[in-house]
Length: 372
Image (tube, rainbow, N blue to C red; front, side):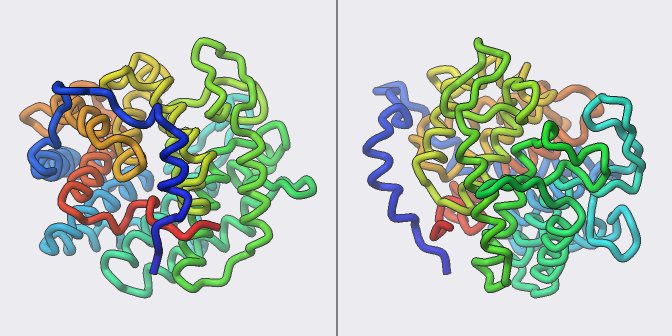
């Protein structure tokens, strides 16, 4: 059983920027969450067969359905169907690792990774999906799948190490295993997987987990080459290039650290920075949230991580309303580029998380953890 992190109340008193100042114009929660639930369902229906094409889209849709299943158990059949599909999509038979359905030059350096490449992001995200499934459905096979995926992260994509620090490689390919290519979000998501497994009674490498957390904390606020977007509370995308992080990948880092540390000061400072860089004063995603938001993935990912966090609920409601207003009659967002299934899947998950939270179903949020 997870308990509220004891630092939450104390840290909130030291973080006034997280408290909204709407006065008499404060927006109310959109319909107690029901519009968000219905919008998430509409988006999932709009995705249709597109939800089965790429592992990342499948797992995002599955996680959205798992939130909806918390509210309405009739979604369980659709949820299990997507989970079965995800299990089938490993890049190699018998190896619990996930990636892409095509070859890809991950860092644009001419080294094209083959189709069977195991990517740490997709594998960690699949593990988090199976952990959500175990939490919601109570089926131990999903815990087993998550543990197998975590073992792949430790064997196929691990690690850069330097004293008390460690980082997960971007993929299992030698060309991606260089200290100059360390990308923070994959280490954070892997840390989140390890933390949730430990909370479920699975043995993990606790020393590695702490090394991942130590390095992530040390990199917070490192300078990068985009001063107009820089913020002392956030991370650069990687150790090389020092380019500003986008909202989507910042979300990954916050989620991983939140599962490990709870609402610790670094996590609260990161949320604070996300609000300053990616949102305007009333909660609407700023231009940076779109230009640095991975082609429309950023805003719904922001809603996903801010829901249930120690951010004034009025501000989260305003963010949700902006996303809800973007959904048209076909279940697609006018903010999402055409044919971007991954962005649309993020909308289904962000809205499902918000709707479940408004309905009092908060079991899948990282804000009620006991810490590392």
